[in-house]
Image 1 (cartoon, chains in turn purple, blue, red, yellow):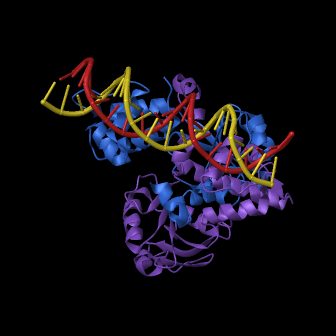
Image 2: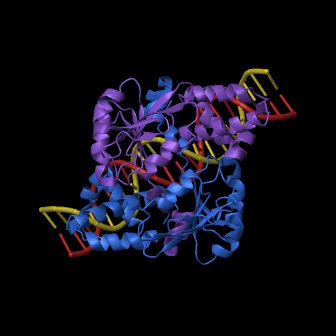
Image 3: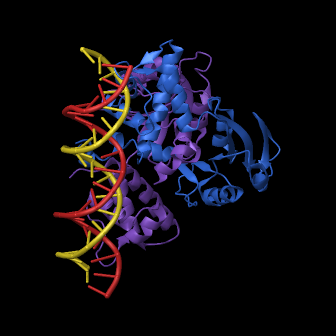
Length: 211
Length: 211
DNA sequence: CTGTGTGAAGCGCTTCACAGCG
DNA sequence: CGCTGTGAAGCGCTTCACACAG
């Protein structure tokens, strides 16, 4: 069966909702309730889950902790993943301070080319030169947060790929070229801003979009 | 004609590529070249553009400055948009320092509920209490960067909507409820991280995704 | 009788082949 | 003759209706 990749990102949302329900002490839920919280249809929720298995009880619904565990399993969040930050400028430093990576992700490396920055302590470690990537990545770090300037992004990505990285969260406004085994997700702020097209798009075309 | 919203985000990429070409002194380009840089097909490039008009010359290609101007026009980037940051924690402060908003976006407001933070100067202004949103937004601020904790996000969004905001870049891991006229784009880090599903997804399902 | 799980229909985005214009 | 612009085909995601299990 072919799984739509959009379904995966919705799974993440469902998982978050389940965690909120659990925190509220709610033990049982339904596709209807999950749908409302996630702002999708109940059909969509059930279909998304059905790609991976049957986790509910007909006539009853879903047990919150059970579905939560299954989703964590599916999403690969039942283990710890190592992260590193490449580029310790403003954004990289802010991310190093970010407390919200959760229990499935751990910052394990901080890299920069600038000798001025190398050696500086950051929360959870010390900034190291990018030359050390090949020693630091294998077996320890799976995902990189790439927060270097646009011009340096492709070169840094090449280093990461050579070091054996599995995925890159790219904050730079470029389309990176990497082997297809390496996953890249673009999270550029400006791209995000302009994805707010409904708000800023030339009015001449706005209604055609909305239609 | 109905415009796929995915086409819009690609337009942003094409625009960035055109700016790079212009910086390199290249005056003429083709759907082929744009496609290669954007990592899509030339068919896709031409179709995306065709939703909005005809900007090239058959048998020749596209003139870089012309297409650039047209794309800026379509995307509504030929004017200045006012931004504000709501929630001046680590992420909000990092964004306030972010130099890359370009000429179409200008930070015009910084808000927080914490009286400790109110009054503190930041690059380009001073932190104000959220109560002032209704006075500050109308006619000056169209888009908000929402960087408050998850629990506070919906309430802050309600304030912004009441103040007349047009779009919200939501950095909190929640699905916001807003009127449909207000555009919301979710840019939560963890959502981004887990969108790297190809890298972390349970191997049991990975190949079904890739297929 | 209730709410899940799913094959099939519907629909929108992408791909394509080629018409059209310079 | 070259490259754009586009109607139509192809394909994948979403929606739906209903069978089915509890």
